[in-house]
Each structure stands twice: as C-alpha cells, then as structure tokens.
Image 1: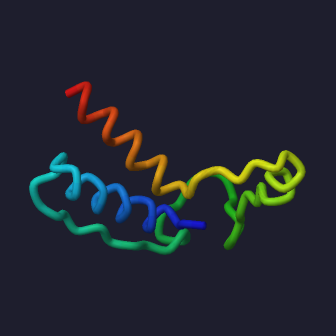
Image 2 (image 1 turned 180 degrees about the vertical axis):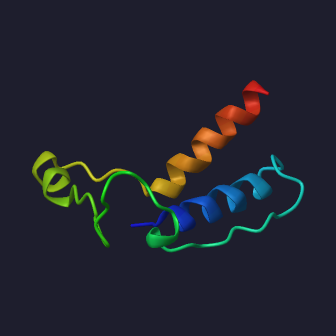
Length: 78
C-alpha cells in the first residue's frame, strides 16, 4: 500500500539509485483537501486484490520491484 506521496518518493529513490536523477528534489506531501478536484474523493480508498491473488494462487512482486524494472527499461531507451 502506498500513497501518491509514497509513490513519488519511491520513484525519486529508485531513479537516484539508477543514475537517472542526479540529485534529490523536494517532494512535499499534501492533504487531499489541499488538492481540489471536481470529483468527490473518499478520505481513504484502497484497491485490495489479495482475495483474487489467493484464488489464482499468484502473488505478484511488490510494486517497488516493478517500478525499478520499469525505470531500468526507460533508462535503456534513453
């Protein structure tokens, strides 16, 4: 589980580790209320696929593993 803030921080960490970024940039968390959108958003929502994974007997890799793979592929294309 990760917030959009967690996701942004992870992207920066992985990109730094891979040499895609040269230095850190500020990543500042904000509350949902501070980012108004036309659609009403729940305070907490989570897509939980654990029951599906269990039924399929397939537990996917942690999302950070796939983030790193994607960044490695992007770096190779650059």
